[in-house]
Length: 180
Image 1 (cartoon, helix red, strand yellow):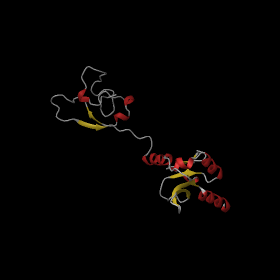
Image 2 (cartoon, helix red, strand yellow; image 1 turned 180 degrees about the horizontal axis):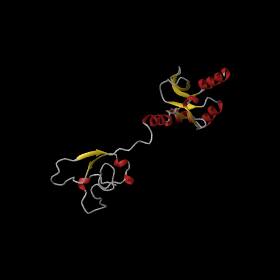
Image 3 (cartoon, one colour; image 1 turned 90 degrees about the vertical axis):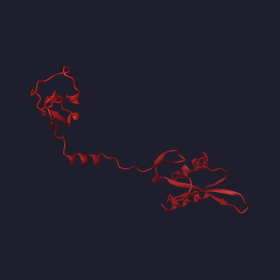
Image 4 (cartoon, one colour; image 1 turned 60 degrees about the horizontal axis):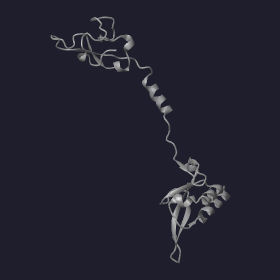
């Protein structure tokens, strides 16, 4: 392979070719047809006289190789293999399985004041996924709901303490099964 910077090459090292020898690649000194690779696709000096006294200019030539495929074929292949943006994945707090966010129901903790000055945290469903606050995700199945209650997962997932009222969530799931 030809040296990348021929002006830095020293005479007497490496394989030498006589001027105008077997190399037919634009007269690049030391290059052969077998040594042409991706690194040889740059502009190179032509001839032996590089760096000698009496030579005022260097004649340059470009080494070109034909591409294996045309440009439109390459771009269409890249677009076919490019992955599409995937849907967000969330974990159900009841069964701990990861599913697409579309298949899970978002729930949110809301504070409700009672008349006697105590505070109750109500777990409400958020089917539109727009309510403010920290949310958790659960499958819209009664089995996952009972598993989350048994594991006490609502308080940990929503980061709230105290008594949790899940009656609104239970009512939403019952009404959902009646309408489907």
